[in-house]
Structure formats: structure tokens, C-alpha cells
Length: 136
Image (cartoon, rainbow, N blue to C red; front, side, top):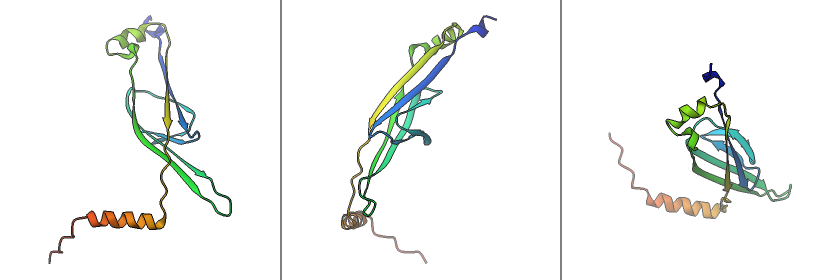
């Protein structure tokens, strides 16, 4: 009966970014746009992707600017979730709240003109090894 009175752990992380309104993916699952608060179940390494497209042109001459960030972030384990301690913490009639805030600066993706893009493609093509002859 005493074990049924045990507490629980409420876990959440709030993601904020500059620029705000970036689309958030945690471990390849879309979570919404920043700022957003997401519940989580486990501690450890998370893959974080943020992206945003901003139209800075006019309706007749649109120009898009893209922001993109792909990184990893580790969710640290609080003391009451350490192995061994977590058994006693779950028996206590206390509700633990673990709320973390992650802030990111999402860099602007450089835009290339068509000529610059073709030049970079040719440079990469020149670095490729020569093709192997086809076997008969």
C-alpha cells in the first residue's frame, strides 16, 4: 500500500532558437516550432535539427533565406534519477519535476549563384577517382 503512494517524475524540455519559429526535430520526429515544450522519457543523447525558411523578397521577386542546424544534445540525469537512488525516489510521496531549457542559434545557409554551384560541382567531380573499366 505504501508503494502505491510513491511519487513520479514529470520531464520536459523547452527549445528556443534564434531565429524563432524554427521547425524542431528531436531524433527525426517533428516536435513543432520554437519556442516549444516537449515531454521526454529518457536521459541521454538526442539528435536535434532546426530549420527555417524566410522570404525576404517581394511577392513579384521572392528571395528565400534558409537557416539550418543539425547537432546533438545530451539530456543530463538529475540526482534523483541516478541508478539506485531512483528506487528510493520513486517510493517517496513527492512529485519531481525536471524541466530543462535548450537554446540554439540557427546559422544562415549560404546561398550560391548557379555559376558558383556549377564551379563547386566541377571541383568535386575532379576529386573523384577515375571510373573503373566495365568488365565484359
